[in-house]
Image (cartoon, rainbow, N blue to C red):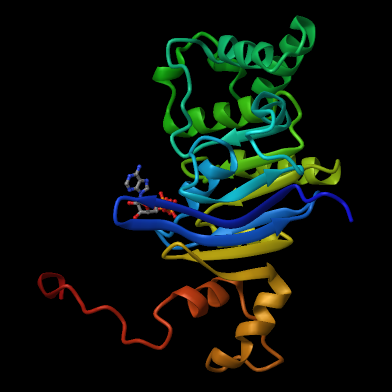
Length: 265
Ligand SMILES: Nc1ncnc2c1ncn2[C@@H]1O[C@H](COP(=O)(O)OP(=O)(O)OP(=O)(O)O)[C@@H](O)[C@H]1O
């Protein structure tokens, strides 16, 4: 069997009394576009940080392309790309300087780095912003630059924490095309986002985390089949949207809607 792109066993992270990620086991096959969903505070970013070697698990294990980070972290980090929650860009550089720096850090030669940096800036429509410092970029521009930096070395596995947040519709369209192209060339993508329409369109597999626990994992079709009988009015003729599936698994689940805010009534 082919080595999984991502494999976790009993992955757990505690912050004091809180167990943010609780005994999470899942596998992502190479070439999969994997959507990792969950409500606010469910444990998505904490999981992604552990998957990318940014945060030590309290217990459990992570293997990327069959290797734990402890085996050869540098080699592994060359094979992955990450857009983390806070992006962590170097603000005192311009975008071309930043991309050239990142490319060189990944061991690309100068010519390849320069060519890819230029192409990426064009692609992300940041080429006209080449004299501005990154710190003066808008949030969406920073997000696009973070994405460019995450793919400059052609990673085999790409981790994206909310890549579409703050990105305009034109850029989001281009990003979707780019990510689709990467999948077609055999890359694996692990994506967290609250934009379920994007997950529905792009992802072949979905896992849902809620209060640190994995509560669903499978193809969208499998998840749909799993909840169809519990959603009122959903017979075989009606195809549930991912939003309906998501709400059925982690949403109000038959409870009364939250009370109204009295002063807004
Ligand atoms: N460094 C930390 N110290 C203490 N608690 C933390 C820390 N990082 C995360 N948490 C807590 O862990 C839980 C999971 O947080 P996490 O950021 O992983 O959620 P998330 O699913 O990414 O949420 P969102 O969709 O809102 O970004 C939250 O209760 C959060 O407050």
